[in-house]
Amino acid sequence: MNQTTQVLTNYTSTIVEAFCQRDQIEDDALIRPHQDDAGCVRLLEAIEAQAPEAGMPYWRTRAWGLLLWQPLYIAVFSVYQVKAIPNTLRQLVQRQQGNFTLGYQLPNNTIWQTYPTTHAAIEALSLQLDALFEHYAQSLEQHTFARRPLLNALLADQILTTLERFAPTLAPDQPSQWLYQEGKRWCDAIGVSLPKNAEWVLQDDSPYQRKSCCLVFRCKTGVECANCPRLAKAKAHKKGLNCR
Image (cartoon, rainbow, N blue to C red; front, side, top):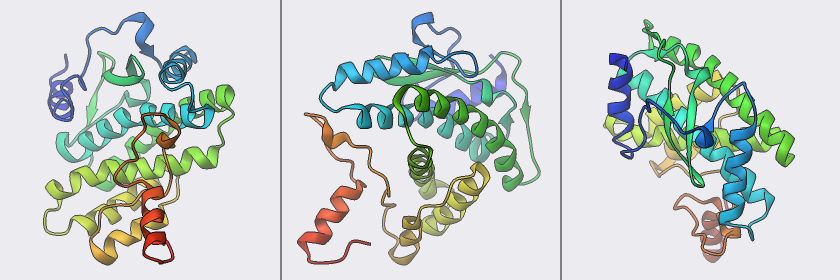
């Protein structure tokens, strides 16, 4: 394994141990970019089997989120912690583990590049993320009739929630301001609109409140996330307030 790739996997495995570079991924667990849709379809089928009652709106939303989370964490770790970006992120292979994604594989010929500024690194890496996410989006559009505005809104939310995990460490004095500024930088680079909700963290230093819903409430055993927009609306309604 490339030495810098090992540094990356040391970081990613702090999120969950199995979130790491894999020397080998089983053929029936491969989610490969730019080759076929089999991996995305298999993931959709696993999600459907786990929650058949939830319906297609949940299955595609869940699949999209699972396809995004590892690449986004890898990107953020690369920029802020490794201080170098891989030139093969667009070729990232992900590992399906049941109805989840966990584990990844960067090619052995990966070259790690450094950039003079964080902004330049984000701009360069965003081109690779855009290519990777475009493949996933096209696959979901074909097999689930997903709408691109919905996928973009979910992506923007996931960018903010991913960065939020790093804010206390990277900007302990001004985590909310850092989250807003870096969130805008990443959203602009990837080409999605910064959620209006992002401004709220500047007003009262509150946790980021998602704009989009993952629809987990459609599952029999589903429990809403702490930052679920449905919960925010329910609280506002109970207090007789207009939800922001």
